[in-house]
Image 1 (cartoon, rainbow, N blue to C red):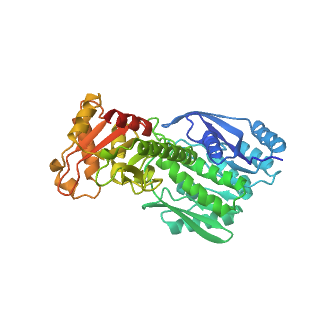
Image 2 (cartoon, rainbow, N blue to C red; image 1 turned 180 degrees about the vertical axis):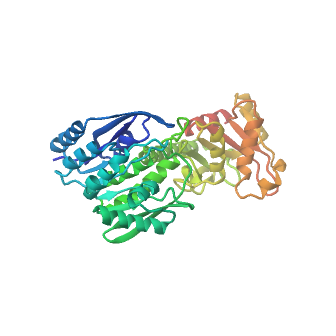
Image 3 (cartoon, rainbow, N blue to C red; image 1 turned 90 degrees about the vertical axis):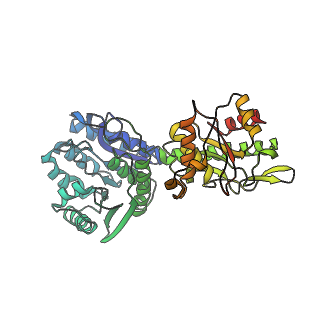
Length: 446
């Protein structure tokens, strides 16, 4: 009995690793699905251009599909770059022998603008591949080509999706809305005679490989047994996250990050365990004289590019307080539990990305002098110097203060303090790469 599900990608290779089979295999892995490959074409490609294309002989493409289908088995498959009419015919003839769901990403043009489907092959795609499709996933420009109509609005997308499905025989069509105007990317699905919309805020990030990864995510989830509409819903969340956390590489269109889907949950668990242990050690140190009136918090952030807001920073819910003659955490470690200190560490990370942890302690001149004597770099900011436009902007004071202190320091500061203001308690913040390093600096000060 085969325990792992399998998904097959029938597509071209991208030497830059951003799209094509490379993106598909990363996506399959992110969903715990074993990836199978039938390579249709080898491209010399990077983030800026496609400089060469070498098509694989059609019979070799067909043999790749046959080899994996008959030995390993295919739970779902997708097509990407099919390049020419002869490859399209060979793929259609071979796929038709098997009964797995087929997602068709009608790849026509690369992100760089290079054509990936010859003009004479579009008719072959419509005639031979689309009738076999469980789902077709065109973007706006591909949908305009397939429907022979202009698409400017969501209503246009609805008409195009229905027209493509009815004229080609595809079971379902989703017209992706990333290229439509507006603040939301709204994808329109036509399935079983009805429409459904999938929407997500448009996010800044990396978009190379978006179409490949989205269709691969749908394929992976179909392979795992999800229904079509649920598989699309998961894929929509997956691709939105992948764009927002894309890898900033190359000089052109940077690629989406498929790994973030699994890396973020894994990293969150590591952070939770490490910070929870550090809080227990801090309590056992019983540094009662270091606890300020407002209490102490201890935070640890996700790494960049995953640290995007205070929800990506773990802290102690309710803070750490004096409890009789001891020090005690009021609540557990949770993401989003800190506001002020989370903003401080997020700002610090813009200058020193590896330093993801911090703790706030009570201000005293003795503590500052001890820190200096122990060789720690100390800097400060004065809240009285805060510009009026910063004071009036909610949540802007701490980022301004941390940035000011970092720019004031001769080198990377371990300790940043301020002397307070009207109604604001003076405070010291200690930074480290991780909670253990922060604790080591606390021990030096104690």
